[in-house]
Amino acid sequence: MTLMRSVFRSLAASAATSLAVTVAAPVAQAKPEPKAPAEFVSLRAVDPTIIQEMRYATAHDFMGVPVDGYRQSLCILTRPAAEALHRAQVRLLAQGYSLKVYDCYRPQRAVDHFVRWAKDLDDAAMKGEFYPRVDKTRLFADGYIAEKSGHSRGSTVDLTLVRLPAVPTRPYRPGETLVPCYAPQADRFPDNSVDMGTGYDCFDTLSHTDDPRIQGVQRAHRQFLKKTLTDAGFVNLAEEWWHYTFKPELFPDTYFDFPVARRSVAGH
Image (cartoon, rainbow, N blue to C red; front, side, top):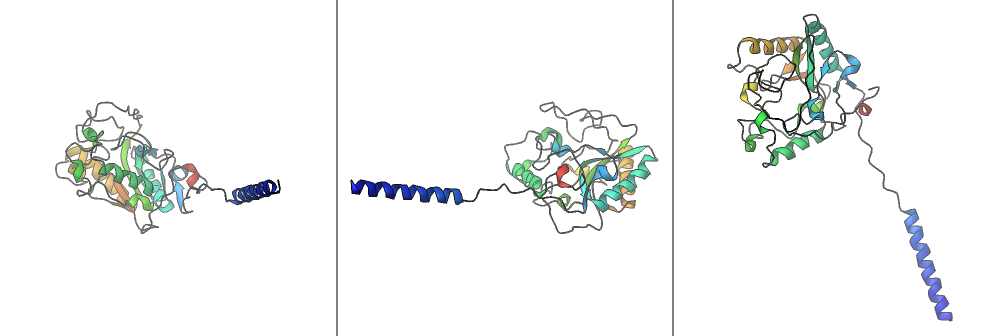
């Protein structure tokens, strides 16, 4: 009997010790989302007249799915870049045009998503529209996909021109018939922008800003956009008519990863 009482006491002491350890164990905390530095702003807070069609928050992009990190359809930029866009917009409005942004700040997690997709050679769901003439094995070598993007530094924007009054662009319907991004404007996806010769994010040499095959009104539109933005302090990427970076960049060597969301930016 004495032996049994001793065993019970030992078991009870072990249970109490285990309970104490369990209670004392720290509770796992969810890692807080990173926030944008104070130098970043929502473009709408600087210029609400600029049209926003944030493609990577939708399924109408070269992957066919919303991109990691795009929580809301929102353009975020460093304040100097946003204010420079505002200056360009003031000039354009007086001439009957508006800027339309497709992408602004891009978190590093989105770039990582692009890289994973590019390595999956079996996923060619959107090839018919965005890269009809490019083999997916060439996306890295040809410079269409990279492991870092200037967009993640906060002063780069993808954009176009819209003739006013703007007609809304209809929603993309996943699974709809895809038309090559270099097809005549009347045939490709009905973007409400002026005719730039290709659609946005067209992985093709026809997207080079000064490609000699682009002539007439299409070339004039590209040059009009380029002059307007160059005068406002932006530099064009020669391989993409839509891609501009405001110089000097506030963060020339920093690649941010806060999500594209209103809560990321102070004051929205």
